[in-house]
Length: 289
Image (cartoon, rainbow, N blue to C red; front, side, top):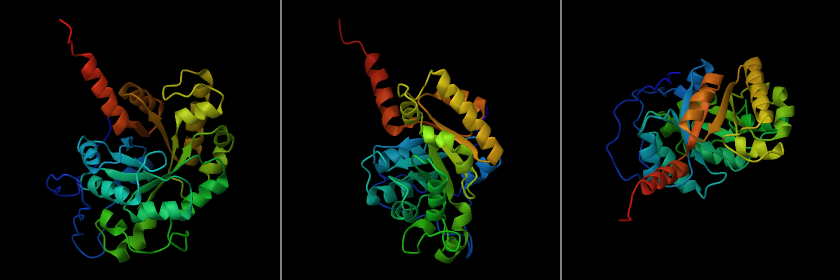
């Protein structure tokens, strides 16, 4: 399946070391704001492929942004990434036609607010198991009266090339809301979770889902029970008009998941890709006579 590329946002900033928060290109005129191309593509059923950023370095984030992914997700749940590093990495990613997303450590107003104020275009809420948790995630991503996100200073408007007033008026329509499905309780409550207004996509975490099912954790699960669960996920996503997503370890698995019907598909992470390439390169070197 051919994956569509994101539209260009105009001239890219010159190359830099990615060690400072760089200002985004200002809007062409008042009331201008660029659209979240990933949210629109997913709503239209077009696949969007990305990867995770775990290393926490702006230069690595820029290198990853330069290769053509549709989105990159900064993982603040598992990686040692603080608020300053998050803001810098998101700023670097927005220099490219790549949607900057963030996974928060937990679904709280504080975590979601800080990630959005840092410039995230979308939020992945971890381990969503119930409708109430999905509702809490959506509310945290929305300004009143649709939600509970508070207003404050931050680089959210800069991330969308917008002035603050325009960002406040349109952010609710542009922020991508993703629920992570990684527990058997979520499978049992799929219809209730995906029926929540404002949930745009789901994202399966194979490792944790396997563990909660009593299976060996794996990003490439061979278990028939896992395959049956994925069929359940795809069917529920279709029923509710929610984009189905999943994390993968290899390009081959990405292609297979796209063929199955998943549209928000992630490939490994900066850390895994670096480690894999380094190991392969070292293994190819012969030092013995």
